[in-house]
Image 1 (cartoon, helix red, strand yellow):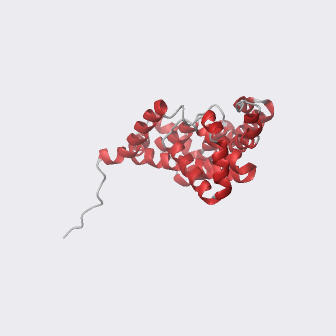
Image 2: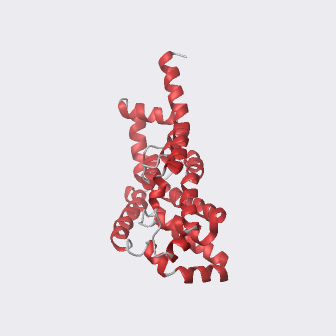
Image 3: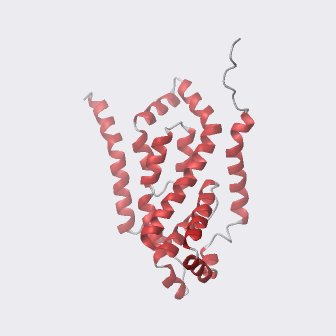
Length: 243
């Protein structure tokens, strides 16, 4: 008697997680924008600080949980959450919690996308013989460098850097590695802004996120981006010269 082969998930079930993310993201874009804001943080700052002092571990768990949901469902407020990490926990712990939460959320949306649309799209790219196949092969050869570039180039939206790798079939371990390491520079900047947030609120101001585009900040990020791109450039040069 022959054993039955492995069962395949129904297409609707495979696409359900990503469809749910898209639906919640669309709803959240219209309903949560006014709540996940610096103004909300300003109004609740004393209550948050008091709760942190009384229940530190619980505050860490709630903070990470909320941040994961924001990233996983591409909700508005990721920048607010990152700055809040610095405001509540300081530069060292704030950066750590920001990286952990953002990485977990990114992994969740990556897995949801890869489970559904990513599987079929990657299979089509692999089976094709034209441009799509060359793109897929080129990505496989430079996977780590390309993933680091997606994380380090400030112009690439965070949700794009989470979804695109899943849709072209990158290795999960490479995605996790480049996500955790690649978001550290940006997390440090947002956390640093959050550390001084109390003084900004006391002056009646709002956080100035334009700091991200100051030369002393954008310069190192672009330098890291160039470093990530260097292996791709060298490999292309060697192939052209036949080295």
